[in-house]
Image (cartoon, rainbow, N blue to C red; front, side, top):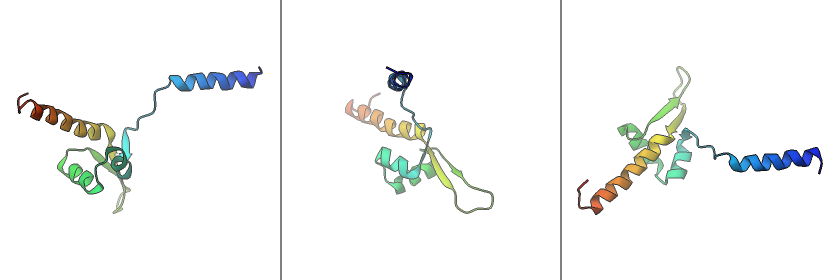
Length: 93
């Protein structure tokens, strides 16, 4: 075994120990893909404040990049899980 083999083996060992990277911000298309919520509904939820987002835009430019906070998207979806549990118990919490 040479030094190169030891390096590759140690890298492989370390890769298994690292948690997968979870992005804090998602583009709209990525939010649609991971959540299953349609693009129009995503924008409605942003407008109503149910999902947090920011728009990266240069000064005096009409267009920018809309980014959605992944935690707010997760929290929004999970809120429906709790509503379903509540309904199953007959509306009592």
